Image (cartoon, rainbow, N blue to C red; front, side, top):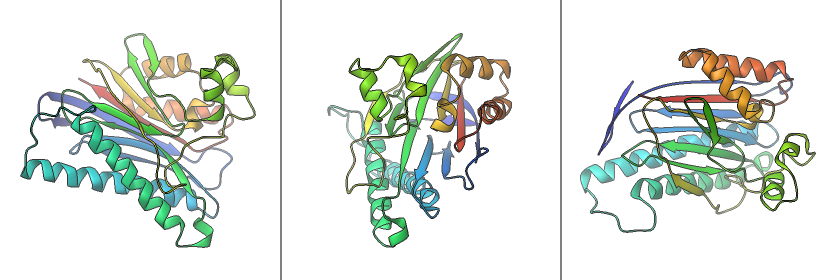
Length: 262
């Protein structure tokens, strides 16, 4: 698929897959891939009575609609050069996630069974020469370049805070009993803080977005090995990653979205 941005022409390919895993009865994950808008995202919902499924899908639907509206507004009235602290794409992406937060929170107040529902979101916005990523929660973005993999997002979780503060070594993160306790989520409060940063991408880069159903069970180096082992077949890479997580127990829903920059 070809996407044309305002300042740079990129050729991208993408693939995505989602699986409920081997334990959960429902799949409360969701993904969004809209190359026309340049938005790609993964969400991992939480809440009883299928509320997590509603939260993740509502968040991504709202995010997509918000960015579509921002895109139309820009076309109608081109913005002057930005001198703000963050770029215009960053501002649009953060605003989209905050709008999604409001939508999920308001929905959670309408029915008793939806109370407390929420979702993680990790989103990549490829709209000009400075692509951006924003996230809330512990769904992740990785960048794969040649033989190296880097985690570009920091989990909003109890154990990640302990790791940053030097309380917990990185090798202990996957075995901690606190690993599934997140400190931020979309929709659980009236407002939310969103982390955003610009990305530096090169031809040949792979961007991997995923829920913790994958990252909790498959270490970074195995993610790299599995993706590279698919020899450029993104659909196969998604299937292989999900199969690997299921082979390790499939304790949670598993969602993978891969973007190849060409």
